[in-house]
Length: 97
Ligand code: FES
Image (tube, rainbow, N blue to C red):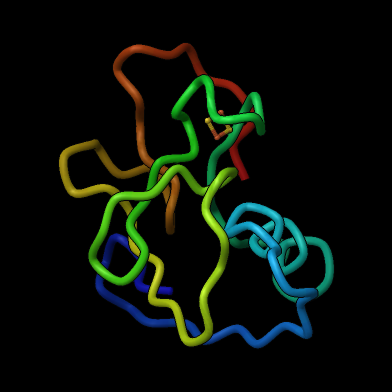
């Protein structure tokens, strides 16, 4: 994961096939690093508060399957909050991690 400040943090998880990017982030948050910042709300692909980039492509992290060796980065066109969390001008603050 590359944060807003350009720093890179590596996380390794023993994930089941088909795990979503958001599920992996929640796993890391709960088991490895409770300081990890990311954002989500609906978890079903409707609110887009979980948008981020994986390997350079914009993904809806609650719907996107995690790939091996993925580089996760925050959206470039949104104001930084922390790590992968960015402000969404269309949403009121929801769950921020
Ligand atoms: S959490 Fe709402 S679209 Fe992903």
